[in-house]
Image (cartoon, rainbow, N blue to C red):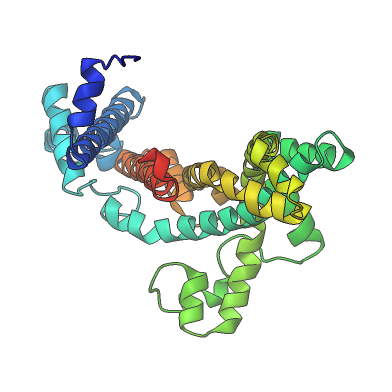
Length: 355
């Protein structure tokens, strides 16, 4: 009779209840998130201190007297040790106080709440475009591996992934807006439609649908379609590349051969069985691509005068408005961490083996 040696670690694991294991995993995940957020706050605080920008001058102006400068210096807490300043900074961020913007004279959090829906709307539509075109492109490329379809789709993906996004944006504006007039110009709406529809979600497409104002809805579509397509092209390139890689791995598995031997059609084998298994790892790819678009749409927003978070941070940086820059940076970091957490939850939800 063969004896099985069980290590003390394996025995302890098997003795732990499912509740205890889940509690331990939840505690580890929570610690990881808190450590990431703490690191994010430390890095943003450090950036604010090493940048060659005087936050006092940004508040009082260059013509202020020495007395006013010193008073503002103390009021901002800059006379205290760096450790104390960092603790004050963490306290303010945790309580939702990002300070006042010197550019708009409003609380930074209020500014971000006003501009973030525009970025969310743009990135969401871009992700939908990237997923709708990227997954079929990746599947077709994998099925026709090495043939002309694969070569063309890989070239399109490589072109979208390697070309500077600002260059594609400028060419798109020149051709589709300047020459052909097929799309709206910069901004979210033509100027005579701005502020007509009541803001409910902050996303004009949804707000105009709620108000059943089709004129403004189609005007908003004409403005968003070009920047969203360009961002979506960038997302398409990444998603199609990953889909192709996952599909090639699945198409070489035994269950695919078995399905073909059983007489299933090639369409069912590829689009139902192989793609069904590929969708599990693709969830992580799609969520991370969405997070990347949210934080990386800065250049697109600047080129298309899109009044979103990227444009807000850029203007704040050019105006030495450090409260706005740091507030925007922290919010982008929080969104990225939150979407990473969401991808982990979705992955475990659709794949019980990962629980």
